[in-house]
Image (tube, rainbow, N blue to C red; front, side, top):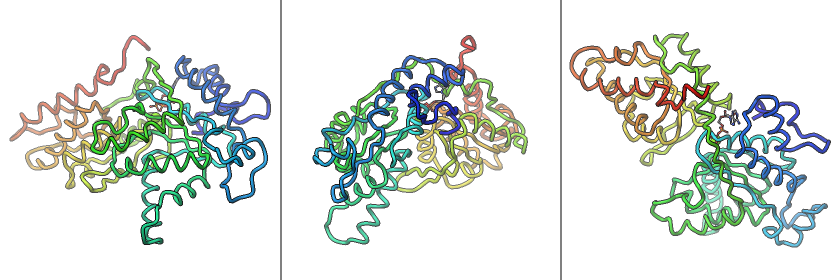
Length: 391
Ligand SMILES: Nc1ncnc2c1ncn2[C@@H]1O[C@H](COP(=O)(O)OP(=O)(O)O)[C@@H](O)[C@H]1O
Ligand SMILES: [Mg+2]
């Protein structure tokens, strides 16, 4: 993300280029707080950055590339000489994505791509589908898929590597083996250690070789900073804006931008019981919704659970006053709050009343009391994980 990088972090011709000097410059300028785990990760990334300078493996049928790696690749033992990739794992807010982006921006590799892992897999399935359509029969789609990906990128940086989908699990092993065979180097961020990927899911046994492959090709680096920097961004943000007018909307725009560090807003497609749920506005684990979209349509508990497992923060515009007259909306809202509460998802909202005034008197008012109390708790500094003493 360019906005994170000062000019001094750009690739330089002198001897002080790369992610480590870039990271240290950000710390020195006060843009980042010094963090030992991040420094360790930056050292690893720097090492990979050195080994990757000019890395440009070419498919076997093309004339061999000149230079060190070109000669190595000619030996057709790509995997033996290819630099090891990195797998940055840790809890949210530890700076994994920030460091990977720092590395990616300065990586001196002609063909490189930084992509959210979920999106990469969606594209992979779409390409397989198109390829099968164009080549009916029994031919294996993985080699041509790997050819096209490797032709585009010799370095792939995946954000938020995770496997929840059996369709992904079934192709990952062969796809990654094919990519590694073609010299593709992988850097990834994840909340899940390789050994725990796809854990407890049907078909896990068939998935184990992929885990072994990942551990063989990527060095696993645990980012165990004590601080959750993302959470600290919550500090000073108001979480409940009344009333739900244009002024509040702009306040939510601002909160969204602060929480995502200005990351590009993109749609994310979640799969809920075989159906697509398109989240139109998402960035960096934060999703933005209108109340009407979430609670005034045919969505239900399954959708809210999917949202609560895909995002760490929900920004919700325009909660109206609720009453027995719009009880369908109220009921959905209660279910939504339960799902967010159970998963400890942060909620920033605009509404026509404070939580305790939100449900107008009458039938079911008692039922809403628990929701109002949860909403109150979700705004407390304690719940948000902000400690008043560590200013
Ligand atoms: N050392 C640091 N000092 C200040 N802010 C940081 C630091 N490390 C990360 N951040 C900020 O904290 C937020 C979370 O970092 P991020 O890289 O998204 O975490 P992760 O990918 O591990 O969940 C980002 O906005 C990032 O810029
Ligand atoms: Mg991240």
